[in-house]
Structures are given as structure tokens and as C-alpha cells.
Amino acid sequence: MYSEGMSTSERLIESTRELLWERGYVGTSPKAILERAGAGQGSMYHHFKGKPDLALAAIRRTAEEMRAVAAGVLDGPGTPYERIEAYLRRERDVLRGCPIGRLTMDPDVIDSAELRAPVDETLDWIRERIAGIVEEGKEQGQFAPSLDGEEIAAAVVATVQGGYVLARASGSAAAFDAGVRGLLSLLAPRPA
Image 1: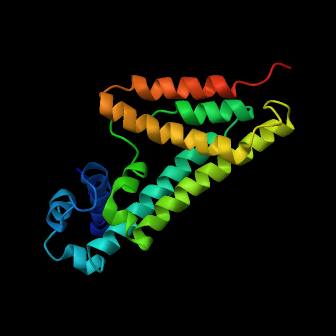
Image 2 (image 1 turned 135 degrees about the horizontal axis):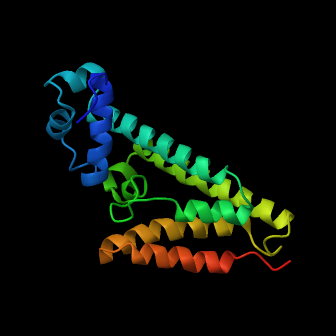
């Protein structure tokens, strides 16, 4: 499953990331992590203090990856509208859900300030970046001066996260796509 050159600690982190996405924190047992990683009994405790420490490393890695993917689109070429559109339309496995968004529904993650911190930081970073792009669009005359960048950013994140939930509930990506189309029609640039 993993490349031969991958260290045991890397395999443990990657296995935990996958299992957290699939099963949540409670459903991710040390035994399941070790089995998926192809690691021996004592490996987890050799590299990490325990499940919470390993989960934190996995959540941080997922958060870093999500920010990097978002930055690649939001900081890419195009007008402010085109960059927001690219973020909303980027390739996603909508039926699987968001690896960060799903953690917000996990009571064990939310109850732990340490485990929740990378989740909060990532969602805040995305909202701040989108808010800045909206303000940039307002300065360029692409968006109405009355738009509030922070409110639009919150709507973008809510559309993405809510779209995942609706798609999973219906078993179809159509619900996600409809939400994206609706938000983009509301954000459509003002005629020059």
C-alpha cells in the first residue's frame, strides 16, 4: 500500500489520516492504524506518545495539505472571481467528504483544543484568503462595493462544507454542484 522507502512513522501518519477520514477518531483504533501501516505492535509508541499524539500529527498533515491545495488555486492566475470559481470547482471527491470538515463533526476532536486547533486554523486561513480576494475584486470594480469579504468567505466555506454533507446524504455529487452554481451566480461580476 505504501512505498518501500516510506518510514514507519510516515506510514503511521498516513494510515491515521486515512482512518480518521473514514472512521473518525473513536473508530480509529491503534490496532487498525498498525494493520493499515503494516507496522509492528510497538511501532506507534516508539514514534509517538500514543494515539492522541499520532492523531495530532495526522490532522496537522491533513490541514497543511488542504491549505497547500487551496493556496494553489486561490493564489493562481485569473481575476478574483475566476480564482474563487476555481476553488469552488476544483476536483474533489465530494461523496467521500472533506477530511477537515468531517473532523468538525467528531466530538472527540472538537472536545480537544489541541486536536481541534489545526482544523480551526485551516478553516480560518481559507476564510481569510477568500475574504482578501473578495476585497481585491471590490477594489478592481469586479464585485459590488457593498459586499463584505468576510461574509462572502463564510458563504463560500459554508457552501463547500454543506455541499459535501448534501452530496453524501443524497449519494450524488449533484447537490454539491448545485450549491456551487448557485453561489457563483450570486457572485457573478458586475457588468462593466
